[in-house]
Image (cartoon, rainbow, N blue to C red):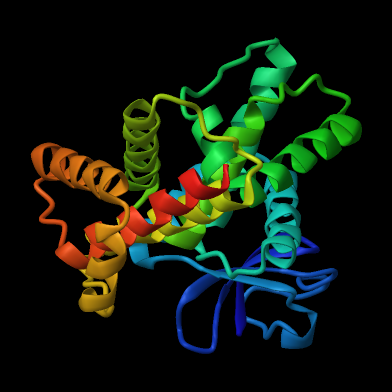
Length: 277
């Protein structure tokens, strides 16, 4: 890979071996390297491919708003997050998280605090991402000395959720999260009680709902033995009724045709909550 521009000794814009413009990071990766010269690949710790001309344009625009330190900070948070959460984030998170951290620091310096109505939803539906994000906020408070509000954890978690589950942007990720919360609200209203967010069976149900919504949004079909599922569903008619209610809401609101297999499987998960809570 060849250097296009050194942002500092540890961050550089390069043309990688596949002739794609990328941001690379690593201790001393651009030290004493001039434009056009080769970058030592053994020094590269993180490699983010920019998405064509729009990616380069976004990156140049980003550099006008934030510091390279923000990019390095975002890279470190991403690296630790991938290790902690056990998945690989797509490259877009570097730009979006760097931009968010820059704005977050500016808000903290000015004493401006904002929240998101999805904060409770994120904590419930994505507990691993939210827990890691709260640790990031605590670490940033200690590192910067700024009184960064805990509400920022929800925004940081959303960046990881988006980088793992979606390739269509933050707006789709937020819609995905809201759909899941609507399903949970329908179930709570139907049974007339709250679900315990720390319950193992509630956690399993939420995990099922997450993948259920992903399948619906991606047009995927669940493969399962319908005969066995129907027999079990006959033994839990109330849960099947709730599952049908959820399917009706999704059809009316989003135009989704929820298959029989999905409805039966949803009923089984609802039954597990009611049997074990």
